Amino acid sequence: MDLVKRKFYWWNKWIGYALLILVIVATPIFTILFKLFASPGDSWSHITNNLLAGYFQNTLLLLLGVAALTFLLGVSTAWLVSNYEFPGRKYFEWLLILPLGFPGYIMAYTYVGILDYTGPIQTFFRNTLEITFKGSLIDIMNLPGAIFILSITLFPYVFLISRSSFLQQSKTMQEASFLLGAGRSKTFFKIALPMTRPAIVAGIALASMEVLNDYGTVKYFGVNTFTTGIFRAWFSMGDATTAIYLAAILMVFVFLLLYLESVQRGNRRYSNVNGLSKPTARIKVSSGKQYVYTAICSIIFLVSFLFPFLQLVSWVWLTYAKVMDAQFLLLIYRSFGLAAIAGLAVVLLSVVLLYALRLSPFKWVKSVTKVATLGYAIPGAVIAVGVMIPLLAFDKWIYDTLLTARTAGLFLSGTLFALLFAYIVRFMAVGYNPVEAGFQKIGIHVNEASRLLGARSTKTLRKIDLPLIKNTLLSGVLLVFVDVLKELPLTLILRPFNYQTLATKAFDMATNEMIAESANAALIIILTGIIPIIFLNRMIRKRDL
Image (cartoon, rainbow, N blue to C red; front, side, top):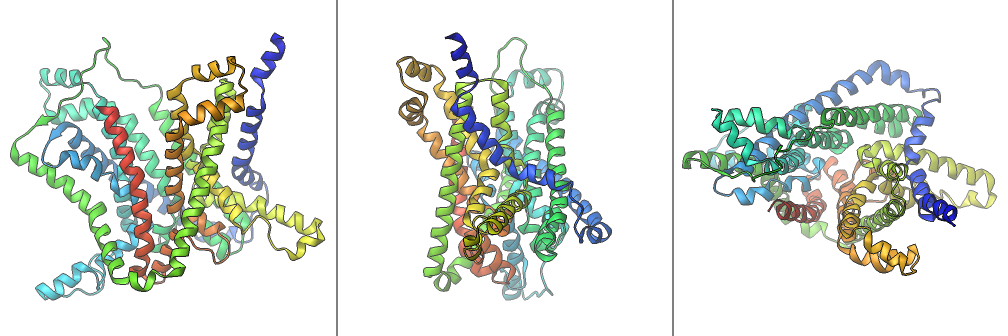
């Protein structure tokens, strides 16, 4: 009897489901690794001789530039709102998170429009001050411009994590620093900043992975990176093997970032030896410094969100009458429906993974669930290539095997199935994390009590666990919904022919010099993206009270 129970404990249907999910989700990575053993495509020599060095240089400079600027913007604002009292501080706690709702490619063409000849700045100079500029006020369609655009959209990653770390630091350590004669600046650089370093590095790592995933900004600005190289090899050159080689190099960048972040973080823990901790008290400074701090946060908020947001609203006001037609409403319906289905699928699979871990909490089961969520760290273009290759092979096998299929067209590749499959791989971690938090809150005892009363695992999940975590399930669906709505490179590669989402429509219209018209789709994406940001800020405030 004990032997039977032990076998069931080590192996059950939920573990089988988890392993199946792992195989499916890891298929793109396995595909790329397997295809690396094939000989390079015809375009590989051209790319290595003429383009590869530029891809390396631009990608590396983009990463370093965004890391430096997000550090400066994120840490400085996090330190101010966490440690000082000044007018507007409680509003900047959430206002400075809003730029996360702005996809980089939308921010890019919005700023191009703001600085252009017909933009509001030059129009003001011409009509009011009678000053005329030739061309754009500032040329940002280059590598420094891409660094600026990506930094002002991604610095909230560093701001959020750093702010949380600053708030958790003990007042006792800062008081000790002051008693030893250190001023506020020295306390920041010698005490607060080193203690927050793991959090800062984690935030910069998240921003860097978003930089590697970006396609819209660098494509629009004409900056050649590995992501644009993958698109060029796949679509322009028709060379799938070369695209796989470039995708593999991009994956090396990603895993190197993850490794460096892990090594830097190590096993560092900061705590008080006596176990006591007093929350940090905000410092009241002179009225002059208060207004300086307000001005700093205001300028960053205006540049990173309010100016481009108001520009989009202005464009929508001018163009909505000719853009908002039946086709546009169908576009919204398709985009929202696709994002909702992807969110439900991701959360469902996350529940299966976590329930397998709940019933068999062993290290190897935990490893299975963690590996299945690695897709969020992999750029969308890489996942798209890894998904398309096996689906094309499967369609070819069906075509060669079944004569009746030769008139039916493609079954999987080039369909919504391929797109949904890629969304699941890419955003599994986004839905997994809130569901995991929900399971942790209810604990294992309720589940065990249900099993002792004779309920099977499936019934226990349906009747007990799911009703208790319904709020976190909705949170997971919402987070995936928003990320899918914003996703661009993956959607551009895998979407069916002539199929548009809000993201691809906005990008296509902007690249075709219809920037004002593209604002209608862009504004819907941004307003939808702000919803989870508000919820996120509320959770942080409740946790830190």
